Image (cartoon, rainbow, N blue to C red; front, top):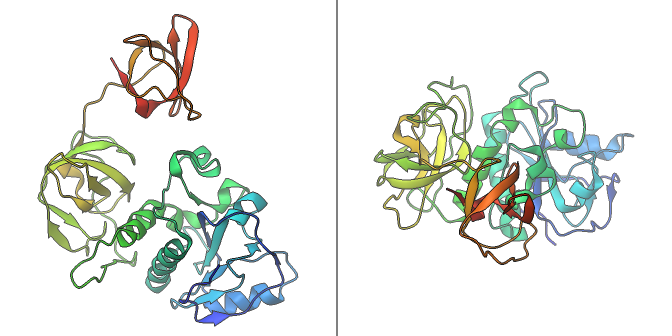
Amino acid sequence: MSNSPLATYTRITKNKTSPRNHAIDTITIHCIVGQWTAKQGCDYFATTDRQYSANYVVGKDGSIGLSVDEKDRSWCSSNGTNDNRAITIEVASDTTHPYAVTAKAYAALLDLVTDICKRNGIKKLVWSTNKNDRVNHRNGCNMTVHRDFANKACPGEYLYSRHGEIAAEVNRRLQGASNGGGVVVVTPPTAEKPTGGTTGATGGLLSVGTEVDFVGNRHYTSSYATGKAKICKAGRAKITAVSPGNPHPYHCVAVSGKGSTVYGWVDSGDISPVSVKAIVKGGKVKVLKPVTYAGGSFKAYYDTYDVLQVDNDRVVIGIGKTVTAAVHKNNLQAV
């Protein structure tokens, strides 16, 4: 198990558990609450009496420090189970809400997370605004935050609100998307003032995973005003990240075979959600795939089933009051 070659300073702390007991499959980003360099952060972890550490520190100047080898578990997130499977990263930040980070720190964070994913076989980052998804790694979610496990504001609203954008940008790099010459253009969140709304053409906040009709002809390299425009085709797409309040607030990826070539940030006025009937308790559904929520299989003997219970993406179906199975909502269609 290797460490990142991007680290410019190394000072290993005694505050760790060696070795970790789980393969690395999660990223946990923290804010350090201080505009430190990577050296200052690593030196602090190496000398403090507090039982606290992180695998990496990202400094205000974009420096990257190694404090705990990747083969070892850091003491960072108030949860041993999480830290045994996660690479934890402390990022230098302001000391007051929203705990903003510098442009250099944000750019270095993206580089570091991309490198960690590449070396550890993490093919895709998945972020969810639902805490239960994060802590239980539901729906492929592999990004967690300190506030999931303790009564803390960490990683601060500045970074927390950008986790979807971080995931989208890292995934773009992992999938080889580039802006000419193989260089990925990143617009760090500096002093731009957000403008524009976060609603789709039909009004209302659209969430990650929503399938939409994209009617525009360009997407952008960033959700911010300085994002570079690239030409693309209209058609069906799916929202993969949301950056509220910015000019191009939705990151969309084309649905294969539906005409579009969009893969980037788009304007809210260029998308509208595909009309899909909601699955609700008391309604009826058709089984698209007879797979239980736990991953098993069942026989679908009927054309339609009654919806007995809905709990987020978990839907209990049956006939009358007799339960047939609990099924993921993506395997059902409301009728």
